[in-house]
Length: 336
Length: 162
Image (tube, rainbow over all chains, first blue to last red):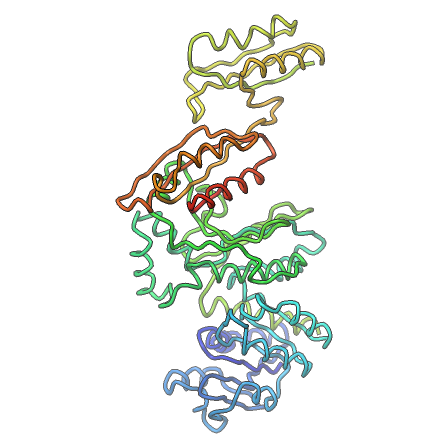
């Protein structure tokens, strides 16, 4: 199976690491020969139809800052679209930076791959949250597969889980903690009684929160995931503007302490149900499935047959996200 | 037939006698009563479990009579009649007029604020107030939406239960 990876940031590098770790195992277990035939970043690309060495890719990136310095096969200054024309691949792994204004350039990459009759795996929330229907329709028209497990909840299984394991069930609502950074901040505020500002600063120093944390703390990231789940699991046709969003930046230690007095915690919860599409801080009972700490994500799906089913998993991290991408790649192969 | 009730009585003398009076008067029999004054609800009231016996018509009359006497019935045959909803509002309680928010909550049909807790901050905007609200069974989502609308319109940040 020939893979083209667009974007070589945390997730792209995670995919290379996971390929290096699991290549033999995947070959033995599923008979898949995983081959990276192209990788791009802002410097350009490395392209080889015989396959690139994932360890060497990581080393070149680490040492020189760009994959275009890959020996023999490096090409500098080439655009992602050109690479899609030039590379020999069956499956695109789209992991360029997320843009939640227009979903570009990821959206164009994905559509081009579909039109070229290639399968696509992505963790990119932007295009999914803004143009889900366009993408899903195009994949269908071109009779190719489109998988995006990694876009929601990192390693927490939810999309394929709902589609496959819960097949036959109707999903009536989903509620969950869909952003690890905010959960980390709220968990620490509850434990230490410190202010939001102080914990945010420490989280930034630890690399858990980004330098510009707005997307996480204002609830936008979680809202993107709400849209993806609504469209892909509950047959809705909604976008980011349909979600009512409240972030956590105004949560105070006073509010947390009042909640704790009665055995409750405050968590940022995404909710998708017939009449609600919302991200907002909510009260959850200590000891309930939603009382998870750290960067964990959790979601409860209310279904007609299986009733409530709850999934938990690491919501972020390079290897964790790459694990979801690998499982998508394997399931595409198995469906062939 | 038999009916199991859980009544909620104020912890003051005479309450239990008042609650039992219509049962005997209307011709129903009392099978058991469990009354432990030391076990209290979060509102400080005393729950009393009563099993009564009689025909359907008599039992209906007893329920009506208890309700007319403003005696709170928490459960009938294990089914809760009321549920408790918690909400926290963040914001300046003076500036944004918490008193008016409280009044508006109580004006919503079928709900009653039964407890209010405050936690003040040096910065009044950061103060928090916790409401415990009792609502008729099955109205939870509807009530939470109403509360959110009222709180938000007063400028508070509303944190509802999940």
